Image (cartoon, rainbow, N blue to C red):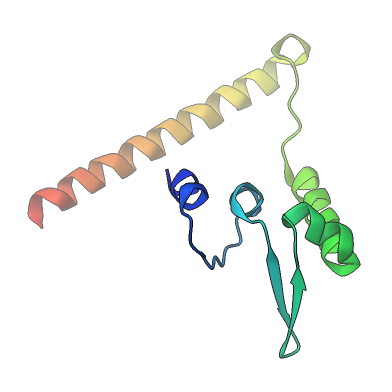
Length: 112
């Protein structure tokens, strides 16, 4: 909803965000603040990355780090029995943690 509201707004919106997807959706101009100076890029975020080599290198490095940290997913049919059990256990723990968290939130709301 926020992206849509900003896109439809006819005035100027100054946005500061670390969410690159959000930035890519709404910006049509990037102003970089670096070393007490402003650098204007009259284009979207991709244009900014094309023109700014340092920013492009940081973006590529960040994407590589995310890719490296992402868990490698195997098809269930190619998993060993132990891997299937470990995966099942992880899912159960995540479910229980989420359930416990929601119970804590509900109880906190009752007492506030």
